[in-house]
Length: 190
Image (cartoon, rainbow, N blue to C red; front, side, top):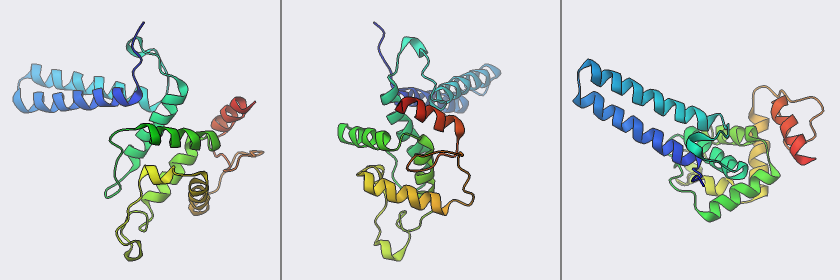
């Protein structure tokens, strides 16, 4: 039976390949070194693209469960969108995994998470840059701590969004803006 790899492991492999490509570029100034550098970066890009597209292909003989993939997708989205001083997630421990899973049950649209993360990045208070925040900085663990916190953040994120395009007829707690995502959620609910 093939070992199941998580999307985070693929991202780690891509980061390792990019580091090797940097090392090759620094040490080998020949055409073959440039070619190797290019190939390593292309492979790293393909790994990242496979993870980001959230296609659950049988990469290298691995099968990824959808729930685990969604959790890793949220963590990858956080790490991609978090700008300093907001800390990135280094490891997803059991408690954080459970909290993210619980929020995904209540808010299944990944677009909702993207809106919340974007709102937090644009909020000086959540980034610890507002004098009233006393240096406190938001973390992913705090964002997914409870449904109430996430619901409030999602509502603020939707309200602060410049255009409010929603799918006609969407009855979710946070209206969907992507018809494909809304349809996928409706199909999984029934």
